[in-house]
Length: 145
Image 1: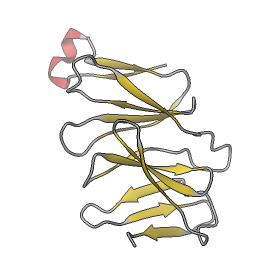
Image 2: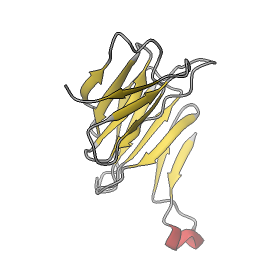
Image 3: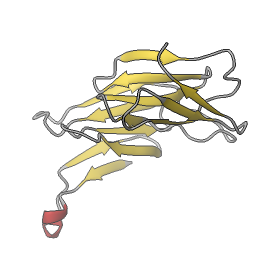
Image 4: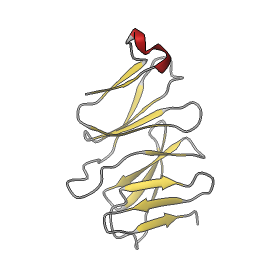
């Protein structure tokens, strides 16, 4: 499977700027909200991929991550944190992982009262808050200690 990035101004030339190869279904693809506008994708092949347009070699950073959520849990999607070059992604161990665009784990947040897998995550646009939704109908709001 191939996820392609096109320049809308040059679609008539029918050549993508870059192609990101995936071996299984892509479950999410997001542009970083600020420069350098990297792309992060999640896939059912248990990899999170990062690609940056400023990287002249057009290399893709791949990070192993258990994305097999199964039938009853929303697919994990890595979403960007607006204030940092980092992404949030749920974890099957009832945690929220925070990864930088090089794939390094910056943190993994959890709490004993988080009783279900936080599959849907979002960062507040200006405050240091993360909200996580789960299949049990709860939303956990995380703030720095």
